[in-house]
Every structure is written in structure tokens, then in C-alpha cells.
Length: 342
Ligand SMILES: [Zn+2]
Image (cartoon, rainbow, N blue to C red):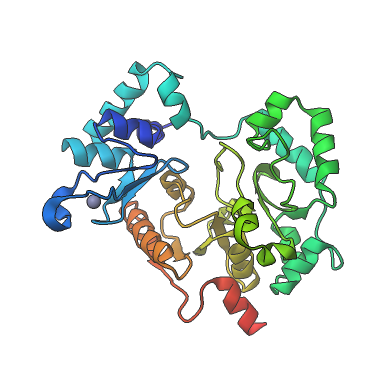
């Protein structure tokens, strides 16, 4: 692995603390105060994203990864920043009590990928009559596209969990990110599964709650409810969704926010890969793209989507890859376009 890739993986919160920022939760007062109104940041605007080891300031809009943070706070060159991070990585004994909570998010191990394969095998392709199939066709996504994009569904999440528990130890299932904080099956209410595949093998999985009743829940019930889409606990994706579409070096690739949007873009005839959210793209993935590829970043038409698309566009361009940000006009996301056309 190139040194700078290893350097980018330094847990961002741990680094921020080391650089002297006073962290509260995932935020801190910004270091770039000269760009702030009145030169202060009393309501901490600098926000850290441990899942992608990146940061963003909601006030002055500085953003970046571990290397950027060191460069800006210490006035280092790229190389000096990488060296600083490598020294920090080798000198900080791990896991210490304080760094443990920060380095919780890791890439799946080979054994974890076996767990995902087992889950894949104990789930099925959505059909015309299944709840998952109806959910997809209700959004005008064809079941062929869903099948080709490794969308699966569990007829019975508890039965799938039983199979997993028979084949893997509790520790393995936890390491794979499939146990909730209470020790239950994380995807108990999330029966629609989006598998991230590479070389025909599952690398990661995200699940979606498709129960109709969810939108009817009110007040406290809604608050206690888990999010509609769930990523694995403490495990981050090693590749973007539908990464195999980058094989064969396509001239044009779309980068979508969310799995339903990725499916919609593919159905509309694009080569499209997806990330779970606008901040979920990891900078090292830029290396997956061939130079000369035209990347269209199609994130949601909301503030976060627009901001992150602009940021990512700059990062692609720095690596010599053509990128432009397409914000769907008049609609919120690509699935809405599909629904309008279909
Ligand atoms: Zn700032």
C-alpha cells in the first residue's frame, strides 16, 4: 500500500485530538478562524466523519482528509504531512483505551466476507410477488436490473440469522458488523439487501427497511425507529457499490448517492456506481478510475449533496480524472427522474 493511503487511514478524530483540537462528540472549534465571521467559532462548526476519516467545516467550508488536516494545521507539505502521520501511526500503541473508540470502523476481514456470502446464499432475488420486488417495481426499478446489481431479500430475517449463527461464532458475526448494539441481528427489520460485489464475491452489504408502516409511525415510535438504510456496524465498505462496472474502463461513469439511485441510473442506461451517502466516498477509491474516464457525480439535490459533489469533483480533478457534478434540476434524486419517465 502506498504510504499516503496508509496515512489517510489514521482515525480522523484521534488525529484531530493529537493536533490539539478540543473534540466534542464529532465536532470541534475550527482551526481556520481567519475565514470565520468575527474570527471565532463558538458554536463548533468543524465536523468529523469517522466512517470516511474526513472533515468539513459548516462555517468556512474547509474540508479534507487526515493529510489535509495536518497540512493546514501545521503548514506542512504533502510529503511532510504523510511522514508526520506515519510517525504518529507507528508511535501510538494500539489499541489504547482512547484510540479504541476512534478506530472502531474498519474494513471487513476475509472471514467477514464469508459471513456476507452466507447471507447472500440465504437470501433470494426479489420477485414480482415478494415485498422486496414490490418495493422495487413501485419505484420503477426492473427486477432484472435489481438481480444484476445483486439486490437480495430475506424472506425471513430470523431464519437467515439462524443460518448465520449455525455457521459462524458470535464473535465472527459481531466482527462482520451484523450484530446490533443489543446483540441481535442488525438487519432484523431491514429485509432488502444490497450486496457490494467484486470478482463475483460479496465484499459488503447494506440493508433497507421496506415496511410500509414505517412512514406512518409518529412521535416517540418514530424516534426509536432505526434508519431506513443500515450499514454494517463498525465496518466500512472496501469498494463502492457496483464497482465491477469500472472493469473494462468505461468512458463515462456516474457516481450516485444511495442504492436506489444507483439502480435507477443503471436502468436509465448509465454505467453507475454508488455510495451510501454524499460523504461516503473514500478518496483512495479515485484510484479505481482510469485516467480519461468522465465521472459524473450525481448526488442528491440537497445542501449536503451539492457541497459534497463539488468537493469530490475537485478531488477527482486533482488526480487527473475528468469530473463534473450533475445536480438533478427540478427533482430530488435520480429515482424521481426514472419515475417521471417510466
Ligand atoms: Zn471553519
